[in-house]
Length: 408
Ligand SMILES: *[C@@H]1O[C@H](CO)[C@@H](O)[C@H](O)[C@H]1NC(C)=O
Ligand SMILES: *[C@@H]1O[C@H](CO)[C@@H](O)[C@H](O)[C@H]1NC(C)=O
Ligand SMILES: *[C@@H]1O[C@H](CO)[C@@H](O)[C@H](O)[C@H]1NC(C)=O
Ligand SMILES: [Zn+2]
Image (cartoon, rainbow, N blue to C red; front, side, top):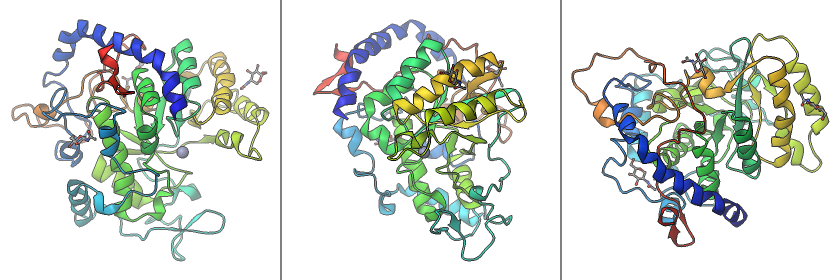
């Protein structure tokens, strides 16, 4: 972790320089905050009150990202399942409301069999009540496929050892991707987290501790998703992710419903898996050659459905497998986009029109006179994207070695 901090230092001074430069387009930011903008969901969705932000601060003094005060605001190390007793009361009451309006299916948590597959006390995991994605049962509304002709790019498990290499490559090819981040990894690698955020790509949720989610109680599912949303929200100027990515294909109707009904998030799975996470296992579970050959098959094969390939920013090797394949994606004329942009109308967040435009605050949610939103309101088309030229709204300054980076 210290290693990551050292690497990050030269970048931080340039980040703070750009942070100052961004004041140039401040008036533009204010215009975008006028009440034409709407949230992704109907305003009576509980997510509006769980994570809200009026302008930059909402009157809260946000601890600088990376400070010990910031880290102390989240479940403690080591990343064991967050203690359900420390879940904010508002999350639990949103869960209880959803349960009482029968929006959360009443199925028991699964138990893993010796092969690591979830079982449901003898019930059929493919039944309509359970619909376990491990058994390839597809729940309405979950995302497995990309539109024909498109590839939705995403990387799981960061901020991690491969993130620096990935960030550097994405800058050279000017390619946005979605980062499904693990909450406890954000807490442990704040400098890398900020670099990812400053790409402007969009950050979504990959749980706090990376558990098999269907084995957890309702409250534990709330804690895994909620803490990860909270650390992203507090560290990105108030952004609320639209999507979460399952762990090892493991979701079912109960877990998907909690994500949707309590937190407004859509569940994302995938339709091709490189096993790139196992490149660095000993012994390795796959090889660069095997990934190369699978990628070749997928990228030169049929274009329908489009591709959602599971990839990781875990190691330099997993990132290298993507770097080898990316030119082949281009040569085969795929429409290549970040996954969240592709399926989320060019926005990874529930409360901003694009990944880099300002968040829509509590003032807009409470506005009395604008027209009633439809459920699932889609933001208007954002302005054309100038990737890496428009910085996202600045997060709190990073606290390093006893100094705030912005004081440079
Ligand atoms: C995160 O933000 C909430 C308000 O949205 C605030 O109550 C809480 O203290 C913040 N936590 C940290 C660690 O900054
Ligand atoms: C496979 O490896 C070759 C040789 O390094 C490279 O030229 C090609 O782009 C790779 N293809 C994919 C799909 O990774
Ligand atoms: C998203 O942006 C791309 C350009 O990057 C554009 O072609 C596409 O139409 C946009 N999609 C939506 C739904 O706005
Ligand atoms: Zn993962």
